[in-house]
Image (cartoon, rainbow over all chains, first blue to last red; front, side, top):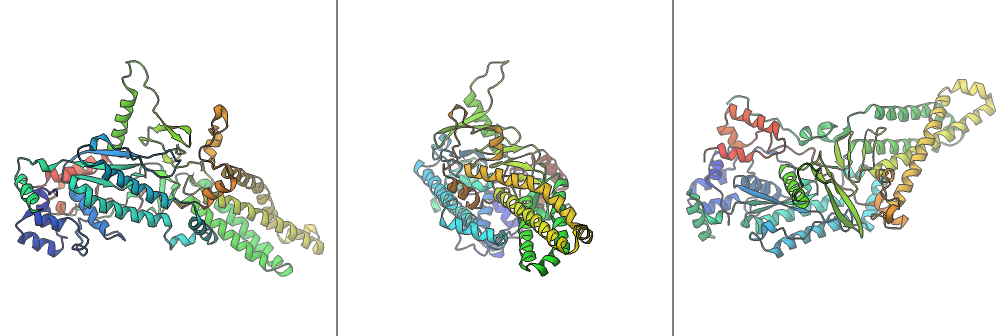
Length: 222
Length: 346
């Protein structure tokens, strides 16, 4: 499990918006590993904690979205090595699909099968969103009959699937990619053009700062 | 700590590149030149109000009250479609951020190999195979992306638009993937409305002339002349346009592709997007999924020029904030958190 540098701990203390339970526990806990577990969003424990860094609490329906955003922000304090982009696969036309070809830069960071599995699942979600069938005809005709005013109240099927995709990516990030120092970015934030994978410095190798002892303590705690 | 701490929420539309204008805090997106759009609005609203004022009372009494009711419904539908076409995002593709642009440049250089000095590098083209047809994807120098198939760069709006059809000044916006069906429904319903008003004007004039004579009728309802003129000239253009777009939809082509002759059949090139079936093509274009906008207009800028990080609130210095602002102006889309964390006490 990757640990965050000390700077993040300072941020926790200084953050005026931090909810009290995070702050008190931060002071009380001595083990940085436990501190990290407070910070990392687990939907069961931190549902109530709005760890705001001044971001507007936009109405995310998926509660994990806010916490994931915090994960992303915190991730910025770990040093970014490079970004790998998985391009679109246009062999079937303009339908949204991503190439399942494994990028060589990730050879020693993640197993091929895991990434392929993620991309295949994403592709299947997009296929589901863009499927032209009975439901999409019904939605289209109903919307046309109401001069598309119904879209002001109703959520389209595509939007529902996009929410599912967003939750899926967050879940994958937490379970698979964050522990390996990687981070997936939802393609919708890049115009559905690429699947961006941010590669962070592999802190498992340790560094000269005190964080190395913390990381070894952390890894033993896990 | 002075009031340097900017807590005003900046939404992303304020920082979007491109020549669009935004209204209602990012909800409405249009092109810059809106003059012709106002003309369209004026013509439609003006002609319809003349119709409701002059013809409808007579026709409701002498023929049927359903006539004005249907006219109202049709008018409302036309307006809804027009506003939806004009105000919605046509399918703009956001520009590539710094890292993505660099990545693509590196790929291009790797693909091109070493170009001898003095020679022009080969054009940036990527070939993809779509349904057993080779399609060339061009590189957009403004947006720094390889344009997806069927996308094109609109020079008026300075954006790459997905499934770019054309830029319509009458509507004041580009017509692309997201608003093509609204545009088509607009032209179709406008044709119907024009035909409807034209027909009932004639009917009204004829019916009244039988009673009172032709010239007296014109004197009593001067609006009729105006309406007939407007409708006559509109008819040819709008009905023609509807017919043209019906033809394009049945072949699953865009106006852009038609003008360029991309699938005209030369060199055995065929449209790889067509299902070869008119019904299927129509269904895909008109009843397909409603694509969401990938341009997050109303999202908040949390990483950029507005320094809203709480730690900055505690430790920030005025000059550092200005430094950030300057950096921000140079790199509008770079994330600033790396600079944040490097200057904060660890």
